[in-house]
Length: 236
Image 1 (tube, rainbow, N blue to C red):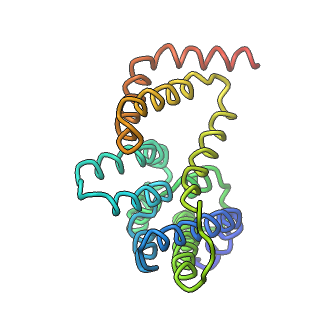
Image 2 (image 1 turned 45 degrees about the vertical axis):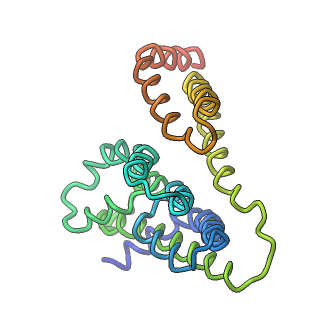
């Protein structure tokens, strides 16, 4: 049963393998050039397992101790998982102990596969979900650990490598921008970022930007929903 589920799950994770290894290695090298040994990306990728949050954690570890700010930043960066969890309530129902790991190991990619994949007949859905999640985490753990190790033994120019985090967020933003027919939410996010950057400065604008964006989206939720629905009707 387990082997059959593993064979069914593995092909779905191959594209994730390529992306996670490249980005994970970049993260591991970034951790190394920031002054951390390969044990740090290994431990963080096992315990945290949140790519964007792990990149942000590097600067948090290098900053003065600020537990409240760290907690708020982690909650806001990973808040989208609340909606992922709600969407997977029915699928993960009745899976016993596997449910706890599936909740912990849920990431964007695992959610996408487990939410939309057609499980072959005769394959246990609980083990299928489990192996999709486990394989994706293993890709990230091995990639980031290898990057941390290579960064400590290879001598090469890593100048500008920290830009990988910025590039990752830019790509995510552009992907979401292209998917949306109405760009009002993107404009709100950009405007909030610029205003908070000017007011609070480059070192402290992240949390105010997230809070401001959340408040604006909540305040204008109904007009934005109507505008989005209208845009979809016009496109049809």
